[in-house]
Image (cartoon, rainbow, N blue to C red; front, side):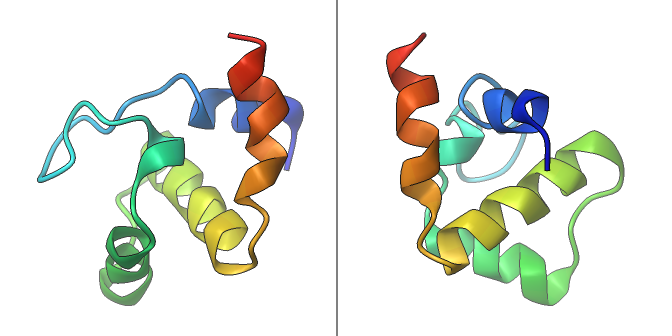
Length: 71
């Protein structure tokens, strides 16, 4: 995990689906869990969703708070 990836979580939005337009960092846990079960999309989006899932699942989403405040 690098700081650039964390920054992308608080600036990049979901490009499709039920939560289209929502920041990746704001996606609900059940949606991230669904991707974990069904498979993350390929490429950078999948990598970022997997990272957000790990943060959410392990209770570490608050690590993104300083990055949100810096925006």
